[in-house]
Length: 636
Image (cartoon, rainbow, N blue to C red; front, side, top):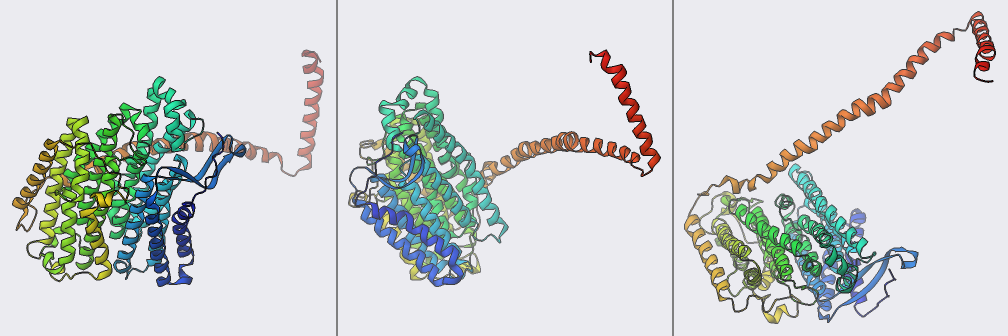
């Protein structure tokens, strides 16, 4: 593999700041927090995120695509055999995603200044946030799969630290371990997929190199002659997205991750980390399009996740868990869109539009706002999260209620708002490619309208159901400003005057003229909203009780049984082998034989001269016998 040219452009300084400033700040805070003090640590974190946001805004003017080489990473034989660097792929997709990551990161840090003001471990929290922003930036800017995988793992580490921030709580500690271990399963598949492409494409795993190889190179020959190998590589890469973007069946970690601070949920579990899987799939969309079977599996798993997560959300009572299952459902929409586009044979991404990236863009704003709104509610209600212990919050928190209503309307797809436009783009592709997945998507849209309207009615309308909700007060300006900014973006981010300069990768053409799709979508919206009003208005407790949905289809229980049967069973078998074979036959049996022989041999060492003389005589006689009688018989 020839060494990549050192390409230096005017964007290189911006890329260095975007990538390495959060790392430097994270190291300074985490290693020097006792010397610096709380206020300095918080200032450094917020200021660095503001600088990164400015750099991301300056970076939005990118035209075309270029590779910027920052530093070498892995090299063999001067780069001839192996040359993998920390390189930046500078195009519309990375520029738009970088704006999302830095904007949400900055707003979450501003929100956290007030939300975490009484936390004893604020420096550790803000240091972990900076480490996460560094890790996520590396994924977004990655020019090759190896670099992406390295930062992919760093995101897993920083997520572990943030979910387990309150590690004194057993539930938070368990949730962080669950998220970390579940993601490792998907990451193992991701690594295998990278190695498959590494072997087929002679060590070149840059996105540009893979695309070129698929057009006229080893990957083209593989896809035509060994289609199963291409499908295996695509599905293995998809396993990484299944873990990181919490798709079925590795979705179980995301709802439990709500044990972390609520601003963390807004950042990594709504807008950035969980979207990394979708971002990666769009980046390799040309590979997905080359494997029809792989694309079909991706679309199917996305559609199933969207539907099942929406069903689970209808029976949850924790405000953050409702939003978590909503996130699962919307991520399913995005993954389904990636598969559907692949089924059509198109390879979108880069600077072209893509329905999955477009929905990721709009979803990031309104879902981050909903999580921060939930954080404001929890903060004002003295950390109460059960919506059935809220009620009447609209009277006490009018601004938060307004922003939450805007976010809800965007999420359920009210016409005129950003969520409606991006959701229609996905449903339009589904209508063209697979009517079954369109039906699943339309039914999911109805369920989304139902459970989000249920949440809004129970938590914000009616009368207070607890002391904490009756004494709730509007949060202060540092928490309101991020909500208002995100509310504005939730409404207008899909309009052309914003989506074009912000590199939203909007899709123009798919679904246009499909008035049937729009009609079904609006009908689903109305049915969901009206049903929720009829069932939940004025209720003191949930009139519906569907245990299958409330218990999340018993996935956790099924996994517990599987672990008990297979992991514990295997552990029992290995323990038995260790005791019988390793410990018994290999270690203890030889030791016992040697000990027994030694015990008998010790009798000969009695310290008596006549005994030694007798042994000497026996030895001499034995030697004479061997020399006279034995050796002649064998020819000596």
